[in-house]
Length: 364
Image (cartoon, rainbow, N blue to C red; front, top):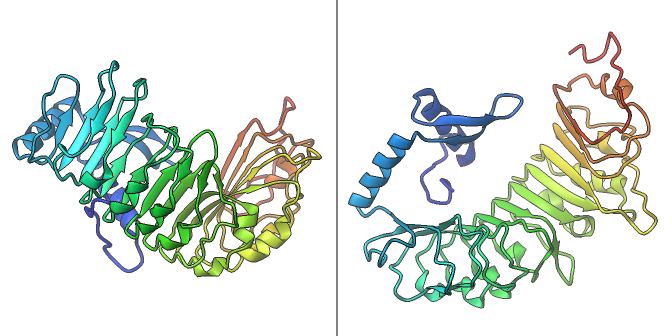
């Protein structure tokens, strides 16, 4: 969100704005202006918060300067001078319309409206200056209005946990969009417009469906792509995705993982690969051949009912996650020999009672 707002800038040729943002969060934590809530196992900050007193001071000052407004059921009209609006809770007994009476906002965020039972209507014609729109958990029907294509300055769109099941073709007009989050518990149908979003950096989805293979090649700014289907990947020239670092792929019983790895070996920037399984018609999953071709990959995640480990791994692998697998044999005799491995996470991967690590295992 900081990047979408234009707050963060690249500090050198090698580090992205996202890296600079994380560095700033660490500095704020070091000065006790921000409190760490949760860290990863390797002590990276996963979530944080600010102290209640500092929060109140910041909100009061921002509202005094008409920087932004927090709107809830106790408030009256929205200030005509507000450019950043955060909506907290809504009346449960009526429809709520954000239309022509709304000032020309740059940012509109919704919080704590997941229990709202009625519909929320948006007039996108009123949001032509909008850069950020976060509708997480907002209930607003199955189809996003076609007018979304008129919000040409939009950089961040969050639709996670919404009821949206289709994105209109006009979405292809959002040439400034940097982040699209459509992670829902069911597939989202899209027209074949993703390749037009030339500024796109992060695309998060649970499952996208398109009537034709989804075109993504040529997106030179794309850093995160999760999750797409095997066939969509194989129909694209992946080496044109010169910034891609994180990739998540659905595979099934027809997927050829060896060919996939050959295809992905051309993506020199790829660091993290996550394979999700869809159980096929015969309830078996494709063997995980060819992973050793991925010299550039340092993090591998496998989620699905594979019964055997891959016969080989990326040679520079340092992080490995195994989830929801049905391994027949103790994986430790294989995993303990991965010379560069520094992080191993297993969740519901092996059903037996014990794992055996030899005295010479994981020596690095």
